Image 1 (cartoon, rainbow, N blue to C red):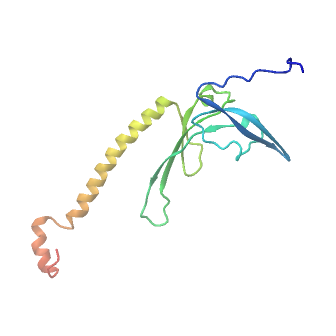
Image 2: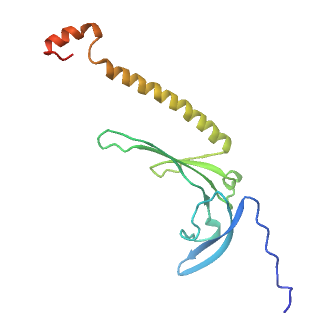
Image 3: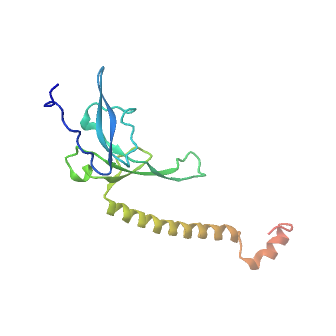
Length: 162
């Protein structure tokens, strides 16, 4: 046996692991092994791609749902996850970045980590503003339909109910 055909296994980059991925083209299916970031939760076997350059890495999704009591309205949804495209021509897409999208499946926004930090700060500020709006609505609803000095007159007119 000759050892000239034996090649050492390449070192895996820190923060990565070797995982199987399925490439399917027509009736042909090929199993390959790729370096995958440790944060990636994409099922590279269960969701085959047509070519190795189509492999994307995506992490778990953070979700925000704004419920509604409205008629026929759809709740507002926002989703964010870490992703990278290892063969993208744009280095920002090749690097790990945060994608943010709505439920409509639109392309959404792609954020650098610094941009995501700024968005998170803005969301904290909006959360504070949302609490102020809730407090305003709550106070308005608790006030009833008259000022307190008119309660007694209303009680008499309405038969004991203010």
